[in-house]
Image (cartoon, rainbow, N blue to C red):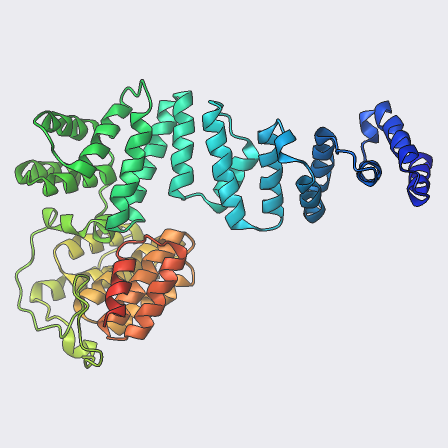
Length: 459
């Protein structure tokens, strides 16, 4: 404390050289003397003489201030001439911590991206646990940061981890992007893989991505498709292969693959309904029954409707149900099923277009459990059935209720999208616009949101 007092006295008397020498004497004695107060006094003495501030000691001060005084840390960091900073990684680490402490999410995102690019260019695949933690906390499902992570992990050639990342990125292209964005993201994935040597079995994923973007270009591509089909046992990836076969007109191969997919333990009709509805016809035969007109509907591809079209009540618009479906609904009351079994039954009924029976099974599953995940699945099935049967107001109510306990971003977006669909069916275009805009603030590329909003704006 005597040293600190002397330095403060020298500064008060404008004896800056003496203050500098006294501070340097104390600093030279031990690392423990590098306190925030001493370092700041030392730098004040140098600034008063227009002397350059030593970058290493400045970094030391910044790092000491980071936890409790991020604003001061940022001020001192700006005092370091960028051209004199040799350790760019240390600078980025400090900037990242400041952005985190001050809650500057956009700056944090850009800094983490720069950090990962720098690590890639340095061919240094070790990412600090602190940065990894920030990505998991704030940007867990961000495509571009995950793509950078894949490029870095490929340097390690930890193929198991790379394959997991690669699957997630491929699926996210379809689950969280508009059709326009899918091709762009897949292309960037292909470029990362194409710039890497020794991919081994990941070469199959590279070929798959190429085919999804470009389709069949030459005869040898058919051999690649065969290899992909044989290699892939993940249901969601199989669904993307099926989609590729459908686009290429390979209907017979597609039917054979669909037959195999039925036996897959990961079979998930709800997933198809949400993300690849064009594939549903491979998994059920439409039931034959008499239908009433469901009143005016609003298709995704056609939003050119009159603004004040009358709303037809659900009771009048609902589909007639066959005796068979009515019997199935009644039989459910007299059986003992677990919630998950009821969900599977509901999915089967949806596949057969027995929407009333499916709705009944989903409601029973919902009422039998307090488990959030099961209730969310039940609600998704209920909304699907209500939209199909024309009970749009009930579908809206279920969607709004489910949002209250949706946890993941995917669940939130799914029920918001269903909410928008219900508003559209009810011709409540202003409300639909509000919901679609809200979706875009969360994920700018979610499904057909942007396209649907543009069509609504044109009305």
